[in-house]
Each structure stands twice: as C-alpha cells, then as structure tokens.
Image (cartoon, rainbow, N blue to C red; front, side, top):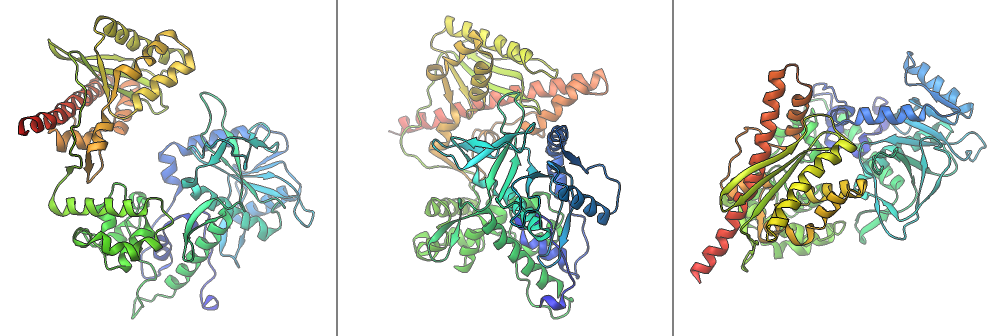
Length: 567
C-alpha cells in the first residue's frame, strides 16, 4: 500500500490528536481546511508564556536562536543541522529534517544538549513549553529531574513529584521529536525530554521537568491484562503508527465506490476548536452518547466498547440493563479506574436525558445544610493572571439580604492584592466578633483556596485570622449538592441554581471566563463610559452569584422541610 501512496509526513500534534481529523485531512474527496493547533493555545495565553520562556532560555551561553530566521524551509533545516553539529548548548526554534520513511516532520520549541549519541556526535533532548502544570505531589517519587531556565543542562533530582499522566499529550509530541532526532543522528544516548510547564510557586521562574521517555508509567488498555503500563515512546509509536495507517487509507479514496472510512467521528473535547467539526457533525446521530453526555463523558475506548455491544445512542443506553452489559464491557475498559461506576453514572444520565430530567436526587437521608441567624454568601472574581480583584458577600440577617463588595478595578498583584483581601477579612472578622454564630457559604473551595494562598504568601495576621474561621464558620455548599444530587449536565452553580432553585442571572451570558473579559474592559476600556458600564456588569454578576448561592441553600432546605412535613 505504501508504494502507491504519495509520500506524506505528520506533525508532532497528530499522534495526540483525533484520528478522524487525520483521515479528513488526507481524504482527497473533502475540501482543504486551515488547521492550526497552535491557535487554541494562543487564545489561552500559551503563546505569551512560550515566548517568555524561550526568551529566557535565549539569554544563556552557547544558545543558537533560530526563531527570527527569514529563510526557506530547506535553509532552516540546514541552519538547525549546523547548530546541532556544532554542539550548541541550546537550539531554539530549529526545524528538523523530514523523516519520509517514518512520515514525520517537526519543529520543537527547543533542543537541549545532552549526552552524546551512541556514535559520538552531539546528542540532544527535545523541549516543549506548555501553559499548564505538568507535575503533582507524590511522596517518595524520584523518577523525574529538573533544571532551571538559566542552566537547563544541569539536571537535579525532582523529589516527591510525579508527572500528571493526563498531560501525556505533550509527551507524545516530545516522543515525535525524539524519533526525528534519531532519524537525523542527533538523539542523545539518554532518552530524556523536557516540559516547561507552569509549575512555579508564586512569582518564581518556571522550571524544566525532565521525563525519561522509556519509563513505563502511562496506564493503557491491554487485551491480555485489561490494562498495562507503557512508556511515552511506546504510546507515541502506537498512536503514530495508527495515524499513518489512517492517512494511507484516506489517501486512496476517490469518491466512487469507496469502502467505509476506517474511523468514525466521536464527539470529544477537541471538537470544540476543530475546523473539521462541520464535516463530522452530520455523520453523528443527534442522540449519540458522545454528543449528548457532556459531563463526566465516557472516553473513546468506553464508547467504542458500548458500540460493539450494540449501544450507540442515549435512548439505547437508557433502556439497557447495565448488569447484562458488564460481562462484555468490563474486560475491555479496565484501563479506567471505577469503570463500572462510570458506566452506571452514564446510564443514569442517559435515563435522565431520555426523561427530560435535569437534576435528580440520589439520597434519602436529610440533606442537612446548616443555617444561622446571620449568614454570608461569598464569591470572588479573579483576573486573567489569577489575582483576586473582587470579594463579594451577601449578608443576610433579620433585616434582610444586602450585597457588600470589596473591589479594586485595576491590575493588582502583590501588596495591593493583599490589601484588598485584608479589607474583606477585617469586615468578616468584625462580623464574627459581633455575631459568633455566623456561617459563610461558598460553592466549591475556590474562595478558601485563594484566601489560604494569600495568607500563606503574605503571612498577614488579618488574613491568617480569617483562615482560622474556615473550619468552624465556612460551609462548602457544593459538597451538599454533590452528595445528594446527580445532574445530567453536571452540578455547577449556574446549572443547580437555574434548573433546581429557579434562579436567574440578570446578565444574558453569565460566567467566570466572561467576567474576566468584562474586568479587562472595566480597567482598559476605550472610554470612561465603557469602563463604568463594565464595572457595573461585573458587580451585578458577582452579586447574582452570591444571591444564587442563597437561592440554592433555600432550595436544599426546602427538601428537608418537605420531608419533615411528610413524616
């Protein structure tokens, strides 16, 4: 087959991407669509983070920076090979030679000089920059290493930390670059790769996280064992090989008497920013499981397993007997923890969807939300950089409910962010001193996490005193909702407040991400009128958030009142 197909190459993102996208890209009967995976990260601030990291790397000694090279593709390849051959400490923005036999092309963010190759040539490790955390705590772990942007080649043990396995996508990209380095003779004899993620603490500089590409720590499906641990290189080789197969079959299509495609569309997260969605969507049944169950969705293997058992739509899963499905389902989905529970949850959501039910109570015991004569509903708003610029509180007592806001519509950080938090905490401490029975309600731990973070960072006595209230005075309302209800679209505050408690926001597009845009307009808007309007919009949105929390509390309390009356 390969001899009849025009030579082609796949980029580093392909192995981690949807195979249907690969099929569509190489299907000559479909129109060409502009696909640029970098756009998504650019919109999320990834480009700024990457530029800052690479700029910092470029300050080091022995660095060859090829990002600004105005040259053809072949000239860029020649420049990269020359830099590698010279033994440069770091090569930034280099273009590696095409690997036509392996169907690969690639431009890593950077290449770092490591141990020499087996043949004695300068050896390199690939590096990729990503705007998210890639490691997490694990006591006793010592498999990874780290280095600084100032001295990227000085690797030190990274203790009590492991790689976040769900971030394996970037490892597949790095494995792609590793295979390219092998093909052109510059792969180090030690198979390492680095990710510069946003794992920094406070204002510290990002650091490199080094991963051995041959270490088996990624849990995957296995026909013989249910699941098996594989390395990043093993995972990449499998995924890349499959996409080469998909591309070859797609390339043979003529539009006349073609066999069915070797892959079929399944709705996944990637579809949200994929240009091929307009081609895939008409091929998906309106009642398809992947399309309709969006919260805690089944993964591709779980969906394919259900398909093999004759279950493709919500209606089919809603009518199915899960106990009858399990003998055929569980052996093929052992790669997932809690596989049976995940299927039962999906089946419950399917029944809710089929019945038109948004929220369903799953408990029989009293919900038991605590109440008090003096109550505070708390919600914060944060800017793009994570700084808290608004602490909003709804105070409810014998005189009714009134909104109290502590805000600063400016780009604040450091001391100014602490000062604003101190103003709110001083108000709260005074309130508790006057009314020791006060309960402070919030939805999830977002508010308490930020309060504790600011207190630890500043060691401010007022903030530390407010943190001391968390144990006895703060109540996470989300826990009560989570323990007593299941939601077909999840249990976010917007969903529970609107579909359960019947609350409505004044703004037509309420949301945390939207509020960050409003904040930017409130600070940097073109006119005083625009800034004032944006400030008012943010304040109204925040007030509605805390009033929604009160509405949910009243709704939950009504269940217990109804149960007592029925008893």
